[in-house]
Length: 210
Length: 269
Image (cartoon, rainbow over all chains, first blue to last red):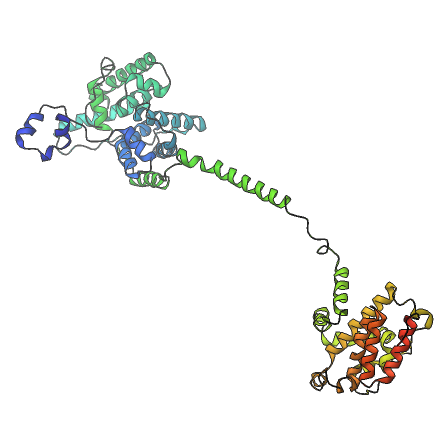
């Protein structure tokens, strides 16, 4: 009965809706895998929903991983192109995010093998825009912290930066990151620990250094 | 990506300050052009991929095509062989036409078929070129007719005398003579076709007495006789009787002589 009430809450009297107040909240949004399966059957709207969920995170991941905007955009489009073309073979055996970032990771590795542009140049300027509601002193401090973080992130070894970005942008667990990168879980955990430690050190640096 | 994430397996290696600072700094968004390009690509490739049932259509189509081809080949192989007459060379076919033209019943209809593909000028020239052969057969009967305006008469005037020799009369039924007679018969039909419409309009009925009296029709009188020569002396004699009844006594007597030459053992009544 609770299921029925949850499905049609608007049609029920108040006395009954109060009974479902303690029911676990249902996520009305379909899962990524379901959206991908719908797109597999030709539903373009499902793909757009799926795309809107992940586009910005994937873009930031690639942007900070490549440190070159044009390269990131190229890889971004390549990743989604592969997702689109592989929809017929898609099987929801794993989390869609794992599938998406594994494709992105492989595209990035292929790009590294094709050219080395991303290693020597970095044209991505850190975002230093202030939030309009913050106090000037606090905002200045956060701005400096963000800048130091961005600089430290660019200085991280590629493997550590990759693991940190996967963890922060995609929200993947260590096992999932291990699956994406093809590296064992303990190595991932070690890389993440080193990356966080360096970034924390960079953020906590005295303000006079900047 | 502004909400806090909880990772139980990474809680001991992550730092909330680092995560919060990173999320505050990471506010880049995908350019609209890139969004549109990806969504456009997705829309273009949105056609439903082949389902399992549709995948079977291609081999089924191949199987059906091969089956139909085999059926057609087998059907063609089982067809009966075409008639040898249809595969005969054109010369044989034209010879059949000649034989058809020689029969009295179909002579009028067969002649146009034989020469319908030729222009009138060609027909006339051919008849003139082949006069000699015409006269080989008709000289005894037509050479002495008094018809100055007839086309056949004008042709006969240029024909050298070629009356059959007595010795050859007995060999008249050889293949060479038969084909020569056939050619002559066909050319006579061609002459009739080449005649002017005025001549045809002036022709009397075949049943009247004036039919044979006309010089133009004198040649036609011999036509049944020519055909009957190939048959029996009795039929030839009937033709001679007809000539006598028509008043063509000279022609009849010449035919009678030819009959006796051809069939010396035949006893005239």
